[in-house]
Length: 83
Image 1 (cartoon, rainbow, N blue to C red):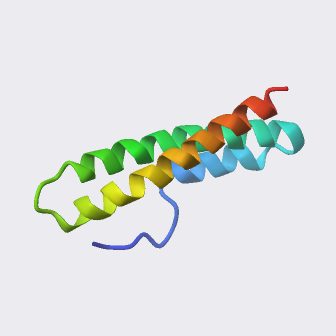
Image 2: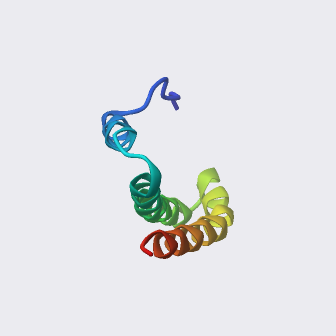
């Protein structure tokens, strides 16, 4: 599997948008992005975990609890930055 050598188009757009913010606005945008990003990751890992007889399935299954914990943390961060 080839390893990316630079961010993709979507990642570059997120970076460009966030680079224009600072302070509390950056904190809010970053927290919201982390929630979206973790939800996308969990969906991908859940799909990979369901594959039978694939080496990646075991890794994905063992990683999902950590991703869920990170999502919970990001969701808490969103609540804190909304104040």
